Image (cartoon, rainbow, N blue to C red; front, side, top):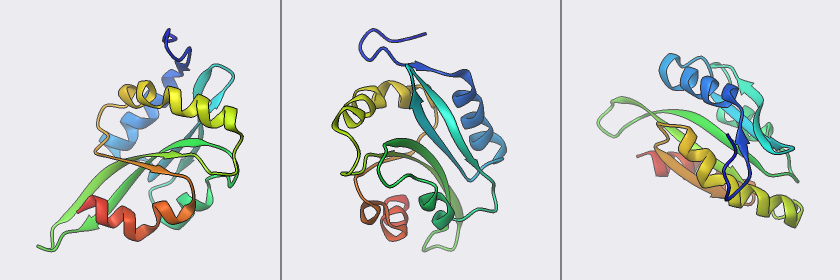
Length: 137
């Protein structure tokens, strides 16, 4: 089901894996990439993997979409979790790739019901652990 504005289809596996992350917490993160004219799952991170494992999985010079399930403890000592949508668009990636990812982002994000925080990052410093934690609280 491609959209007329972006022409980008979203593979069902993307939605299914996201639902598993959200409901069953089977994954710590999911990395998506655009292949041809559709968004596909590139990598699934197991629940044991850390935020560092996640950031290390993002290519240095290509765009990606990612979802990260962030567990944290509030100032009131409550265990919480927030689902982040991260649009990774490094400065070193090709202009055409950045344009395709930017124009398809909102449509893809709408397919993933349950995103709580959105983050746009062009280099690793813009999605450091401290920034994620600050956005979660």
